[in-house]
Image (cartoon, rainbow, N blue to C red):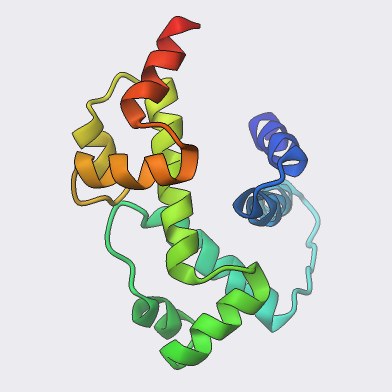
Length: 156
């Protein structure tokens, strides 16, 4: 629970859109954990839209290692793919594919900074087809390559 609160605190202070979304997701995780360990029955009322978005974000985060299509996501909340994209963007400020890409790059950055995994293994774990594709997208987000990111980590 402490690690969830710590992550929530760091994400809350961030200006990144996806970190703002993660704050909601983490808050739901903390609430869920509290309810699961509580001895009293607690009833939480969420709007239908909040429940849908929360479920979609959780699904995305659990499946980053594979291709996730808008059609697949739209089927989870019983919406037409075109309507789903508008719904997702209205509630998150970004498209589903942009959100997925940003989450993948964030996870890759975390793995680059915290492990010694090969870049090809990291690319596979976070859903990129190969290390060069990871490198290209990573550089677009962070203005440095995964190799440069790891060198910075190794200097500290």
